[in-house]
Every structure is written in structure tokens, then in C-alpha cells.
Amino acid sequence: METSAEQAEEIEALIAIYDQDFIVIDEANRIYEIRICHQSDSWWSATLQVLLPPQYPDRVPPVFEIHSAWMSDADMFEASDLLYTIYREHQGQIIIYQWVEALRTFIDKKFNDQEPIDAKGSRSDVSLKYHGENIKLSETIEDGDSEKDQTANLSCNGEDALKLIRSERSDLCPEITHGEPFTDRKSTFQAHLAHVIILDQVSGVLQELKKNRKVNNATHNVMAYRIFCKDRNCFLQDCDDDGEAAAGSRLLHLLQILNVRDVVVVVTRWYGGILLGPDRFKHYNNCARNLMKDAGLIDISPQFKESKLKSRFKPGKRQ
Image (cartoon, rainbow, N blue to C red; front, side):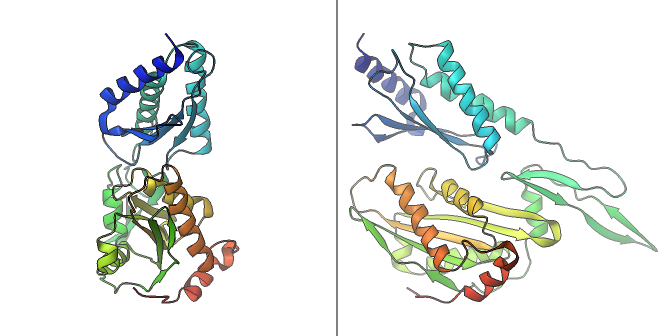
């Protein structure tokens, strides 16, 4: 069978198996994505992007990228090595299905290997994984004349951690700075940025932005935030794709590698009718990066970052 025919049959089979989790990025250049969704926690998901060279599967493997917000460099190396091992064992055969299922097993193992919560008597810290971060929490309560340290009873998915850290105050929406719109092939992207210190403010920013009819009716409002909790020495962070698969996790990854904190970033996209392929992810991140740079959040030494953050946030242009 010719290489092109083998590739076509493999793609047909993958579409039948993975349905909406299989995405054609660029059919002419044979670029595809497969979303690997974790059943218990969507954070523990990944995307495998593959490019099929003309010589695949006879002589070379697919060119691949693994995208996942939770994977460390060590995890990424381990996963990549796993895929190369599968290729060596099945050289000359179609292997994308084996790759996807091997990654699914790899993710399940990492998820199950999380450290269990320690809930002992006396003083003890509770450790849990919340979206890739180690959260250490303990609370002190008074009992009569003596002060007893008790450990909060938290679930591993971080829901109770959110309840503890979330402020009961309903602060007004912080000031929002808007970036310059960027247009490529009739699709327009615009970033929005705000300084946040509690989760309620994240919701407030989204609600304020969507009061604008243009923003509310946009095709996608991709969001990511990172909040540093000093008293608990942990990060609260999350993202929302808003229908643009993997865009939110990539935006959050940008915040992580730039080491910004106490920030929510929303990038709005108005779709213009022309598919952009992988370029759309570049535009989301570039718009966010440029606005953070203008706000003074990039290339600032850690000891001055917090003060700069508060002083450089300005109202900007309200829409």
C-alpha cells in the first residue's frame, strides 16, 4: 500500500475513534491534533499535535508536539521518550493510535501518583495538587485555654482549597487595561488585563468585560489567571478555553513561564470566517504578552514585581 493511502486510512480510523477530540489543523500539510481528556479532572488533559511527513510510516515517525499545562519539563521528556520507544518497537507501522493511548495511560498514572492528603492529629500540613501546584494549607483554631492546630480536611481536586482561600468580600471589579487590537485574515484579537488578588475579582473582570456587547458577542473569550496567596505560600490558577480548544491552557502556561502573579488575562477573538490554523494560538499569546509588557509585568526583578504591578496598572481605554 502506498504511504499516502496508509495515512488516509489511519486518519479515517482516528476520526471514527476520537470524533470531536480529533481536530484537523492543516489538511494540506497533514497537521492534526488529538485531545486526550482526563475523565476525573479536565486539568489533567493533554493535546498531541502531529505532522505526517510523506515518508511516514515506512521510514520516519510523525513529527509531534505535546501540549499540556500541568506537565513539567521532566514529564514532557518522559512522555516524549515513551512515544519514541513505541515508534522503535513498531517501525514501519502506523502508530498514532498507540501514541494517544500510551499518553492516556501516562496521564492516568501521573494523576494517580499524586500524594495523598495527610490528615493526622496535632500540627500537620495538608498537601494537595491543585492544577499542577503544591498547595500547603493548615488552620489554627482555639479550644478553651489551649490553642490546637488542626489540619483542614481537603479534597484532592482543590475544591475545598478554593473555599478556604476565596474571600467572602465582594470587591468591586478592578480596573481593566485593554490592549491594541490585532487582525490577521479578518480575525481580530484583543487582550484585557487586570490586577486581582481574590477569585471574586476574576469573576468581576469577566462580568465587566461582557457588559460590552462586542466582547459578549465575540467568538471566544479565552481566559487565564494566577493569584499568589502569601499566607499559604501557594498559587491559585486556572484557565478557560471558551470553545477554543487548548487556548486557555497555553495562555496559562505563558503566565507560568513569565512568572507573573496576581493577574487575570482575557484575550477576545472575533472570528472573520477564515481558518488560521496554529497561528491563532500564537496570536492569543502574543496579544497577552504585549499587554503584560506594556503593563510592566515582564522583565521586572521579583522583589520589585509586586510594587510595579500595583503602580503600573492604569485604567486604559474602556470599551
